[in-house]
Length: 185
Image 1 (tube, rainbow, N blue to C red):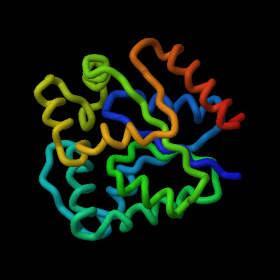
Image 2 (image 1 turned 180 degrees about the vertical axis):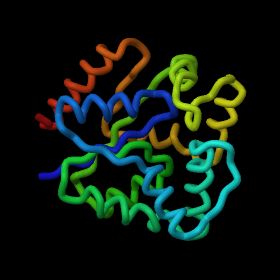
Image 3 (image 1 turned 90 degrees about the vertical axis):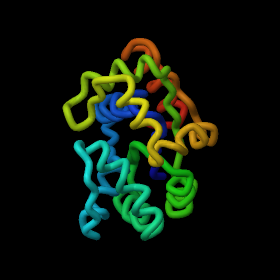
Image 4 (image 1 turned 180 degrees about the horizontal axis):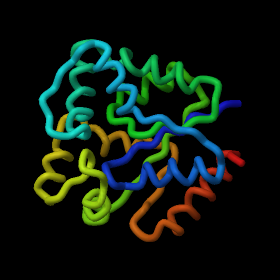
């Protein structure tokens, strides 16, 4: 049986930490929704005026959903992960998770990752320029974009929820327990 773990959470919650750890310890590859959205948007020639890649990604998703339908990129995501053990990182819309589940069936497990706002902000301050937020106002503006608006509701629908407010080691311990429970070795 293949297993597709779909990570849902706000910026800075620890999705990339989950991915890095799962790859190094369990050899689980991953793909980001934003990567597939960017591929499709660029193929369709969708231009957005934004100062950073993060903001471009936040603008492309809603445009694709409105103009071409969510299925325009979810089918591509499903093709990339179908039949394999994979992590899908950063789902941002209810329709994405619904369609991915339709495409992949029972092989999909939705994992929510929670972290307090202050913790997340401190983490994103240190990212590379295209993904960093230097002020609280910039971070709040990013979180208020349409692309981020459904995350709280999606977190309520997750099969499993992890909290990542303390150390990396504590989070990794939670990951080990969850992955063991899911039968990942």
